Image (tube, rainbow, N blue to C red):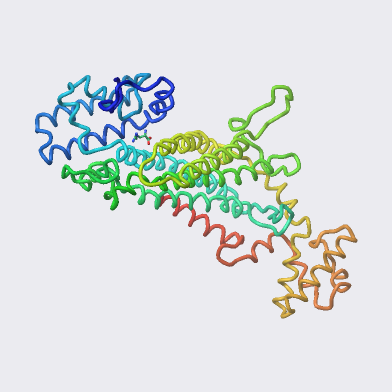
Length: 461
Ligand code: ARG
């Protein structure tokens, strides 16, 4: 039957509902270029052991390469009753080179080692695209940080005012997790670069084909050390789904900040028209839909990961058909990030910040209280006592309806004999951020160093 790779031991074909359930071509066809590359590498292996003549090999490889071009051009596709991409491509090959030659290709390989190899090769290629897109978000964050070297803002913990920080410091705090995601892609690639081809159904092949040579042909660094593991393992697909979910989560956290910053109450930033949407009824609206979709898609990416992990849990070795369910979740995660990540880069890169608004809010909520305590510590007051004195300053300012930066010499005397007027010039947002001058801190010089470090790491990915 068309596109079916088995049948000799069956008296009849599968029931319609059986075939319908079994069919994966509608989603695994996207692996066709990799399947055809795998077939060329396999034909090379068959040639090397004399199972194809030079002439047969030449004719077969030419047909496979023509098919690859047609698949990429969109002029070759599958039939409705092809069971999977492997069966569809063998059927098409046979229509082109005849059953005597086309029927030789399958020797020594199984769909089990084929699919395990194709999914790794596909993930390697797709993750490279994700990596480049993630780097573009890092670049957008770095560009915004570089454009606002002196802008200050309220730094928050528990979403409450905590200490003043530089806007650039906060923006770069979103760049680091994305850099680590990029690094995850790079080191995951080294694990994905091991080819299961040659594992055959589970036990390995008996025809003397060289898995290492096939792996090299396909751009892998080597072949698997265990054929059972080669066909049964899907941890690398799950790890890919994890990295994609983590990218989604990191973009979601960035997006939540953007959503807050663009509210009337925060007023820290305005979205560019090109990266926001309006309302069908409220004419004044400008909504942060990119950021909201990032937040929403993060949930979907987590679902794809957890669904896949649940599929794998408890599967006995080696191949089980359950493993066919690995593809759609990870394909979906890739498809979602393909549209999402460039949009987040566009949104971030075109945000207009309002430094005067952020500066006005930066000292509010008594965010300079730690500076009072640190000033006392530098004058040898024990920190626990300094904490109490700074707290008393806050209490006094709260009662008087002023900020810490508005205290007078009289306020200081009233609170503690340790407090002298020399403290007063230190009580400003600018002095506060300048003082946080250790590596990784929010002082302008440190943030400038950090920006250079981020840019260098991004360029290296
Ligand atoms: N379509 C299958 C999968 O995605 C590969 C084919 C293996 N099928 C089989 N009956 N052994 O996992």
